[in-house]
Image (tube, rainbow, N blue to C red):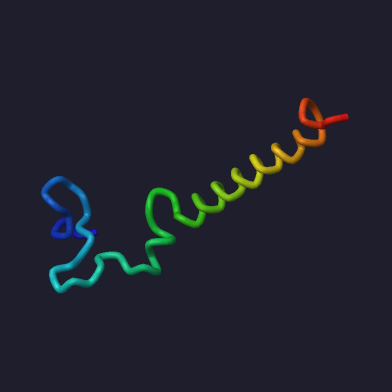
Length: 66
């Protein structure tokens, strides 16, 4: 990244002077500290695990009913 693209506070500007985005939408999914697809996959797996715990708890333990 060139030094000319950074704002005075160190953040990267979102748009170029002609209005185009600095980072194309294709690269937003694959670049950065952690790729967005990796965060989304981890979050989705966590949600599935929590829902699975609720279903497993309904068959065993306090909510089993018998």
